[in-house]
Image 1 (cartoon, rainbow, N blue to C red):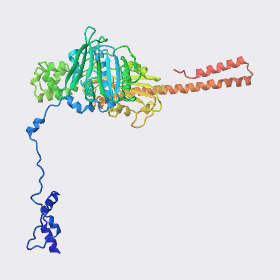
Image 2: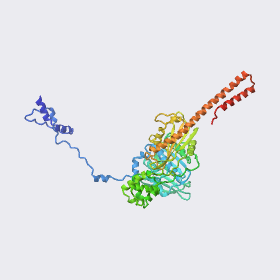
Image 3: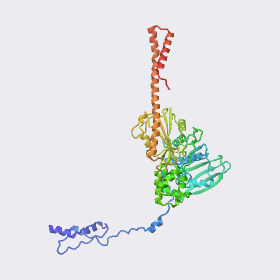
Length: 579
């Protein structure tokens, strides 16, 4: 038996077994090998010992070369990128696409009116053309757009005047309205229709524009002059595939919040198939105009500093630092160049990379004043209260505007408005409005710094009920607004604010300040309720006391009435007055 097992091991080498297992199922079955003269007859397992040389070979893989890879490489335009990634811009579902398109057009109109010093009057129309197709139109009374710029504004992504401007404004990237037109073009094949007029003396221009996504360039399909009744303004029409719904995160909700955050604006809204809604102005004055400022050294990174030194028109480093940055004085220049080991008279373009690194470290280390805050235009406490009173039925309104603060060298300001009581539901979670530069944020609430700050405050200490990880419950509407020269959105769709520690801190301070005022109001209201209850006891029982005294003392009716008046006056004086 031992010899038979040894023979089997010799007849089945390990490599042959692996070869046989890896052979194709269609290979020819091999003939059994003849046993060696000094070995016994091989067993049945030996029949599959060796794979034949004639087994089918797999096709050879074609590999790419550096030259063939180079032939396939080409530049990707920003339009092509966002065509494939339109969810980054807020066009990831039909309902949200309708809201995003309306929002981008409204933002442009409000910014244009603000820059021109015009009290805005907006007209928003949504017309349903089919079950999943709508046409939106936004018309304003702004300064209009000059003819040469119309195709670029609506037919080219990343084109605008706001990206390099350091002041508070709704738009930042130059993507929004052109992306809305591109989405309409992709889903319906229709161009964007634009009518614009700059003055009563100038003709109105009508354009039909699409986007060449391969080149990120506008394609003008129609350019002509037309009669228009408006003296100045712009009208934009976009046909797109979308879904219209009412309720939270709808266009209706967005328009109402926009009217609250912009109480100086008049808005006429035509929803599909519904009655026309008119939001009158709550205030008749324009908000304070924000001023453009220069970058603050604390917010400038090394690569940006290198580019600025290459592009500066100044011939000397000291002049470049003073003219291209805010809060840099002669004293600061002397401290910075001394710490960096360079001279103020050095040509900025001649600085080496190590020298610029030292200069950057010196700028971050030197003590500087905070950047100027006239670049901000907050809503203001009075305007917030007026906006809330105009739109929300409540008993009590309050607002808080915090002093300006800074993150990464960018000034920002936090405001909180509050409406409490009245017809608001008392057994539901509070409603929260999030806004950035007067623009409502309606999606990605859980990823937003505003939500995180609201949830981090213990509202139970201010007289409200609150469960862990949830908004406070009660008859409450909470409005939180951040104004900044550069709002740190978490994505291009501008739906949530990044949780920088400085921003969260200011949010918490503003929320706690308005919370203390709310707690004082709730305590006062409870005190008034208790007082009124006690006064009702007086009115209820004094007549019975008068009857008893009349019977016991045999008083006349006149004496009874005199006693009742005396008792009521005495008890009223003993009670605290109701404010």
